[in-house]
Length: 555
Image (cartoon, rainbow, N blue to C red):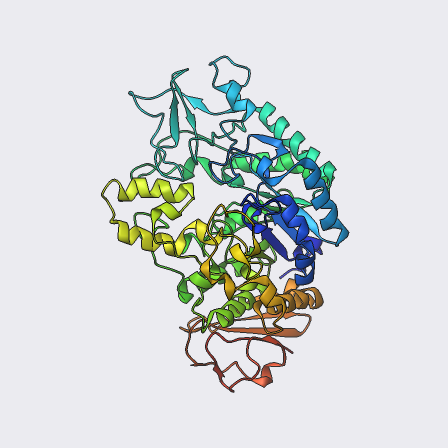
C-alpha cells in the first residue's frame, strides 16, 4: 500500500449538528444558530475538529431545510446572517472549523429561479430546471421519487412536467445549463469568502442526468428506478471536476459527497489525485442491508454483524491507498446507532454505545459523530403515525398503508426501527423540562429517557459515554496509526466479534468489539496483544470478551 498524503481533514473528527434539534435560544421550540453558539464550549470539550451543520438556509421546510428557497439567506427560524457570522467566529476562535451543507441537486419550488421557470415555456429561467412533455397522456417516463410516487409533477399552467427526484416541492436543477453551474459556483465562492471550511454535498452523485429513458421496475415496485440514468454518471464527474477547478481548488476545504454507490464509485469521487472530492459517504451498511423487501428500507431487518462487517471491511480494503473514506453509523437520515446496531436497554446501552464508537473511531477514514451519539441517545419509538413529522414517513404511509398493501402495525414497527425522526428528536442537555432544549414546545417531542440520558449528567460522570468519546477522539489526534495505518480484517467468520488490525511503521493496533450481550470466547483478547489504549471495561477475562466489550491494544 502506498504511503498516504497528509491532509488536515484526514486527521479530523467531524461532529454533525441538525440545527432544528440542537438547541433553541429563543423559546420558539425550534433549534437555531444562537443555540449552536451557546454550546460551542461543549463541543470544544469533546475535542472535535469540524462542525458540519445541516442546512440553515431560507426554506419553506417541506423536507426540513433540504428544500432551499434562497442560498444566501438564513432561515428565519434559525436566525440572521449576523447570527451566522457570530457562530462562525465562535467556531474559529475555539480552533474548530465549519462545514456547511450544499444542496444543489434541487432547490425549493419557492426559489426565485423556479418561480420564474414555471411562468412560461419561454421564460429565461425555464431551462434552470428539467421540463418535459408527457407521453401518451402520462408522465415523461416511469421514474419513481425517492420519497414515493412519481418523480414527475404536471404543471397545469404550461402543460409540461418537471422532474423532482425527491418531493414535488424540490424540483431538480438542470446542471446541463451552464448558467445554472455559474450560479452555483458563484454562490459557493461567496460562502467560502465568508470563511466557511468546507461542504457536505447533498445527493451530489445525482446532478448529472444523462438520459430520460424508462428505468427498470423491480418486483413489487410501483415505479421505475432512475439510478441508471441519474447516478454516478460521467456527466456528474465532469461537473465535479469543473467545480474543483472553478471553486474548490481556490480554498483549503473539506469536501464530502453524499454519493453512495460502490467502492469503485467512491474511488472515482474521492481519488487521491484530488480532482473531485476529498471523500464520500458509503450507504451500503445503512441503506443497503435494509433492502430485503420490495419496500426497500422499510423493514425491521436491522444490522446483523455478518452483513455490516462484510460491507465495512470491503470498503476499508477497497479504498485504502486509493481514496479516503468517511466512517459513521448514524446521521440525520438514519436511526440512532445504539438502537439499531447495539442494545439500548438500560442495562447495556452505555456499553454498546462505547463499543460502537470504538469500532468506528479506530477505522481508516474520517469519523463522523452525529449529535447526541456521544451521549448514547436512543430511538424514540413513536406509536402513532401522527407523532411523525418526516415527509418520507408520511409518503410511505400513503403508498403502503393507505393503499392497503401493508398493515399499519407492521409499518409502525418498521418506522420505530428505521425512520429518520428517531435521530431528529431534540438534543438532551439536562434534566429540566424538554431536556433543556427549549423553554417552549419542541417542534418534535423529546425522548422520555432524557432524565437518564443528558449532557449535564454525562459531564459529571467520568465513566460516561461522553468522556469515552472524548478519549477516542484524543487517541486519534495522538497516534498516526489510527489515521494512516493499513486496515487488516481479523476473525471475519466470528459470529459475535468484530475484529481488525491497523499497521504502520512496524506498529500494530488490534481492535476487538463484542456485538452481543453474552460473554464470548476471543483468543485475541490477551495482554500479549500489547498496551491497552482504551476499553469500556476496567478488567478483562483472558481469552474472552464480556458483553459489548471493546478493547484496543497497541504494540
